Length: 380
View 1 (cartoon, one colour):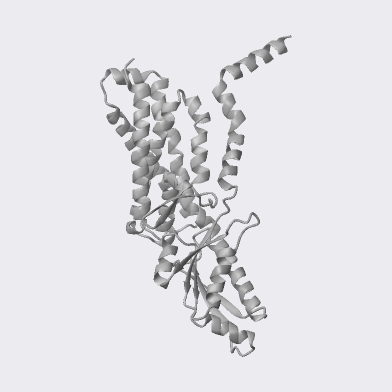
View 2 (cartoon, rainbow, N blue to C red; view 1 turned 120 degrees about the horizontal axis):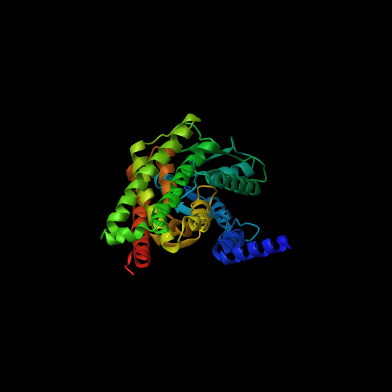
């Protein structure tokens, strides 16, 4: 009987705490549905910039073969971007609007025709260009290499009519798998600010000190400025500690730490803005560590730091394609860290990313400040 009473008591307590129960039951199913709609029919595209110098028609045929390549779901795998100049195509590698550059020489058609007739003196050489620090580069190269070899063999009837010569556009040593993940791990350190920033806000309400703050006529702007400055300092310390840990394990950055610090400051502000939105919807610290896990995991999974994210195009802006995951500031933080630390890029090379982070910071701060002020800072 005592067990029955305790069982009923425990069940009723869990039912009363419906937010925690709902989160426990729906957390994994929510992400299953989210991942399904995000990935279903959205096979990862590999963007290939083609510089076609071929004077014949076979080069055009290879480009068409690339465009027709599709997955088992009949979704195109390669997104072909045709460029007239090699320098412009290589610039796409640097700003990550292309994962691979394929340069077809002017004698592409003639060489394959000669090889088919048995009169070729040597296999044809075709160059590809890429950045090994781009996690999509190797997959793009694998697809293009296979399709190019297959196309050439079909034309000539021979298994090896050409040699593909890969050229790395990244200075220094080829990065290890560990090196590729360090920029994403720096962004992960900043994502943790969501708990400390939102916690600083919710703690005041949870302890009742928010009432005294309202009585003291302190403005919301002053209070949030103090919280923001504190969180920026914590963010700088978190990124510094993460980088020093990676450095002790062999990672080496090729870029300026001053540039990394600027990205960290802006990104920390963006996370604080998101934290304000989260804090406006929660009541206690317990709610933060449970229900607050939802936005944290969305940032972690869909910023592209853990694994490549399919491109779901929203619109074009200034020659760039804006995808669904670009609405998360940490997507641009990872891209900026990667370009600075992996390729030695300057602040000028990450202007787009810094601008995107700044815009998203202003938007999230505006929404978060309005929501929190409306719910908690109005005298009742």
